[in-house]
View 1 (cartoon, rainbow, N blue to C red):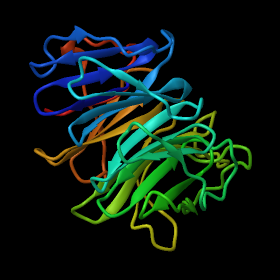
View 2 (cartoon, helix red, strand yellow):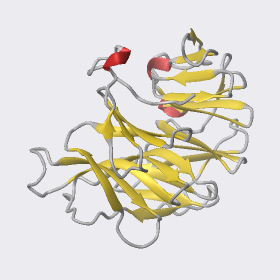
View 3 (spheres, rainbow, N blue to C red):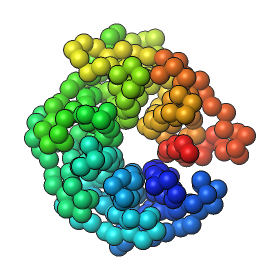
Length: 287
């Protein structure tokens, strides 16, 4: 499972190998659905509900839409690149991002236009998530050590992430997977990892980080080290009811929780749920 969305009644889950399923009881029971003319082996990566429509994106430039989550319609994106992230910005514009510097926009999720303006970086950069704070957009790149910002989803600005005390290898750029807007402190918080040359890390030197910044000049503030490991925290979620932050590790089951906006993190014990430590997990959702 890589993406979850709800219209308040129906929860839609998407995932690998064309998975799509719905639940009307908060995720207790699920019904398998089918995408429209989707290659069976294609992985779907993200699903969003907005403007009375579920929209899902994924491998091969796949875009699917549904008003209810049960019956889906294939849309033409105009690209074959992997689409990873999706956002509905300012209640007017759908924005999808993906591999090879792909940014697509649409007013109706049916007709899509590729955006190139102001990207200013290598064309193999993989854009992983696109998030909004209400007035602007931020895109994380998982292989280029920077992020993109825009206030209109048309013109974009490349921004480098610098971190005090880090000297990354030239061929191992920082990788940032997800971001969320902290409305209480008016700052962006990102999760990612960096390969540092310092000897105070473990043998492979990979360090998982949680960073915070107001997007003004200067280095990002390192909040907490999430561990020196190959494990990557790729998904980020905020529980507004309890004011808690969660990060989910990709590949093996690991969920961590922060009660203070990312300053400190503690692991969550999922063994009581019958989840094994080697079971894959891709996302969280709060009801």
